Image (cartoon, rainbow, N blue to C red):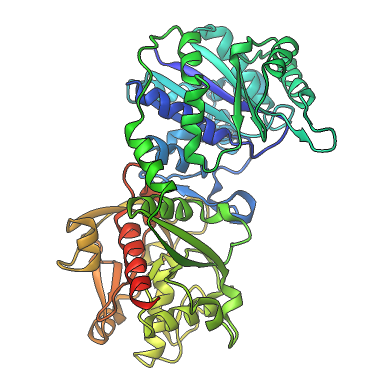
Length: 537
C-alpha cells in the first residue's frame, strides 16, 4: 500500500505549497522511491480550462488532454514524469461525480450529504493513484488555506483517511508563514499558531510544519512553535525565501525534510541523495557565460503565472546554453501604434505567446512583420503561429483582408479557421483539441535539427488551425510547413525560408520542458538569440 503525505497551507495563499510538494517529491525520488503528486483544488469549476488566466494563471495541459492547475507543471518539471487527469481534482468534479451517481440511483434513495458522500468521493480520489503505477508515496496538495469554507470537505476527508490508514501511513505537512515585522525587527509566530489552531479545529494535528520566512528562524523560535503547535522541534522546518524555485529542493535537503518524512512513515532512510544532475543544472543557471534579451509578447503580462511554463522553459534552455535569458514582458496592445519599434528593436529575439480572442492581435502582427523583415529570431506558439500566418498572408501574399476566423468570422481570406471537428461543439469546457498528438517533421528543417528526430509528439490546446487551402501559396512564397500531423494533415510547424530562425508551432512546447530535459525548440531559439546578439552587438 502506498504511503500518503497531505500538504495543507495556512495564513495566506501563494506560499508555495506546489514548490514544497515538488521539492519533497524530488528528494524522495532521488532516494529511489516511486513518487507522484496530485492537486486538490477547492473551486467549483470542473477544471481550470474555462478560467481567465488572470484568475488562476495558466491552464496546464497533460499528455492525456486534461486541463489542470499550473502546479502540475511544477510537478512535471521537478520529477521529469508525466501527470494525468487523475492528478488534479476540483470540487466541481467531485460534486459532478456525486450528482451523477445520485441521478442514476447509485445511492438507493439515500439523502446525499457532504458527509459521507462528498467526503467518500474525495477519499476515493485521494487513493485512486495507488493502483496505477505501484507508487511508494503519493503527495496530495490541498489548495486554499486552513479556515477557508471551500477547503472544509477536503480537510474532513483527510481527517477520516488519517484515522482509517493510521499515522505511519498518512502524515500531514502544513505550510505556514512567519512574517517579519520591520518596525519591531522580529519574526512573529502568532499567525502560525492561529493557522495550526484552525487546522486542529477540523480534527487534524499536523506532523510537520514548514515555515516560510524572509529571515532565518532561531532555535528559540522553533522551540516556541513546537510548544504552542504540539509539533516536535525537529519537525519545524525553515523555508527561507530562495533566489529561484530550483534552490528549494536543496534547502529542504539541508533541513532534512525528507529524512523526517521517511522516519514518520517508518520507511528506510538510507544515504543522503547526491542530487548531482540538479546541482549541475543550478551551477549552469547561476553562472552563465552569456546573456540574451528576449521579448515575450502577450496579452496577460500583468500576471506572470499566465505564462509560467514559458518562463520556466526559458530557465531550462538558458541553463543548458550557459546563458542568462532576460525575458521582457511586452503587452501586445502596446505595439499597436507607430512607436512599437522602439519597444522591440533592441531585443535579441521575440516570442509571441499563446492566447485567445482579438485583443492585442494587431500588435502581435506588427511585431512579427518587424522581426521577419529584420531577421531577428522569432518563436511563435499556438496563436503566435497563427498571427505569423496572418502577417505573412497580408504582407507577402498581398491578401489585404487576411485574418483568423477567431478575430473576424466574416473575413474574405480566413487563413486561420475554426477546426471542422469543433463546429458542432457547444460546451466550452474540455472540448478543444487537447493533449498529445503526433507530428512528422521535414528533414533538415530547424525543428528537425533541434529535435534530432523526424517523429515527435507534442501537447495541444486550441480550436483554430491553419487553413490548408492557403498552405500551397504560403509554401511557394517561403513560409514552409515543416511539421504535419500524419493522421489529419494539419499544419503543426512552419518555418520561414531564408530567415536565420523563424519558427511557429501550433502546439505548446513549453509544457514538456523540464529541468532534466529542456525543450529542444526553446534550446534552439535561445541559441539563435545568442548567435544574433554576437553578430549584432
